[in-house]
Amino acid sequence: MDAPATPLDLAHLAGWIGRSETQSETLAPELVQRFAATFDREAALAPGAAAPQLIHLCLCQPARPTAELGPDGHPARGGFLPPVPLPRRMWAGGAFAFHAPIRIGETVTRRSAITDVALKSGRSGPLCFVTVEHRIESGGQLAVTERQDIVYREAVSASRAAPPAAPEGARHRRIDAGPVLLFRYSALTFNGHRIHYDQPYVTGEEGYPGLIVHGPLQATLLALYAADLRGAPLARFSFRSGTPLFDTAPVMLNADEDGPAMRLWTARPGGPAAMEATAEW
Image (cartoon, rainbow, N blue to C red):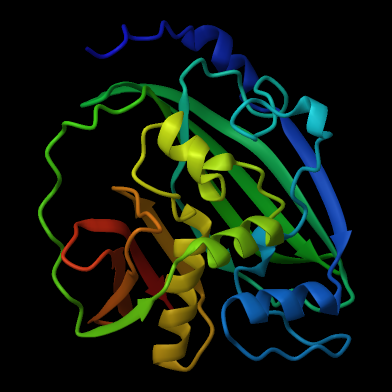
């Protein structure tokens, strides 16, 4: 039997709308080197060189003391993000607009603000969506604007029927998203969420069949794949998450041309679409 629904006080949570924070750090060539190694790519490392797109997700991340982390490895709720009293949290979707490159050696500043908190009902019960907008500057110039959609929900019953299998794209690539890749990406993004690297926790405490492939990792894989296929950096990239992916099976990157844009999605072999995205140039 599922646990009773958690009461949510929208008026209280809405008090976080408008809250902001700013983080800065210098983009070191060593981080670019580790990013490129994680994704099996080459990257220029000279001062002033343009860094790979979506590396901004590895920059200016919160560095809370270990004592301030919750039992799931995330920073305890009620700081910058509202204290939503639902046990599961995931990156539900978002969008990026790329205005200028982030360059090695420059100071990168991320200015973040909560712009909305909304409640909805889903098949698993109440859902709380928190929208965060980020402005990322490099060397004082606007480089990326980002909308980040975070969803909080109850634990999902394992008995729910799975969605239908996703089709295979006209272009596709197989990725081994095993524990080493997941650990490396967690380290790149200073992400302590235990569902990505702690197998006993994710299976025993949260009831999933394996380690969960990060939403930002999937988005990065799809965006880099789209740029490779077109041979040009992206101007815009938007995505939404559906079903989770686990380290128990490879990840398939799929792509179909869609006029001037490209439609992309991730899935395990024979499984439903996990993340769907649109890339534009």
